[in-house]
Image (cartoon, rainbow, N blue to C red; front, side, top):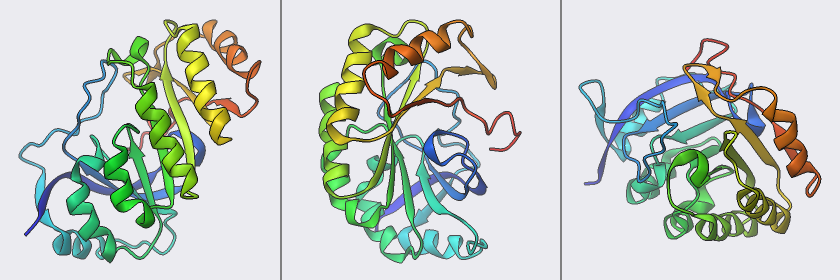
Length: 226
């Protein structure tokens, strides 16, 4: 029987990207295949995390009032690490599923794409994340989402070190798929971690070449919600 470890399950308000302000039910999974230097999310397993089967997790969700919830947000960590578990679990979910992902695991995505409605594709810029160049993987992932008709947007966490190459690659992917590109300045302890003078300049660099670009910082920490 498949099991997975979940860090937390909670209802809150989406604080990032295109769907800011919508109430969601969040499931935070405990594993990640990236180690972004800006990450402040407490997703790693500890004494508070719980082990679930697909059935027991579905039963746990039934204890929440979801009639006014926009969607079920799968987050982490990286939810697609748990794809075999998700294939079984999502059969029991009766309201829209929202996937927050590092947008590199295309083969895993294909296994559950018919069970997902929304995708927040979190683009990993080497300059901000400290990770390797993943633009080829991001391009394939987002192409797969859009070909399947999923409501997809790109979220780009950046700082003042963003390069012209990174800007070009982000625009190239967004333009090919005709999707929104959300610029999210790095946050540090709940505050924007980039000097404000850089923000208009970086936004303008994107919008000169692609109009579907917005600058939206994290808001859930400002609202004092998870």
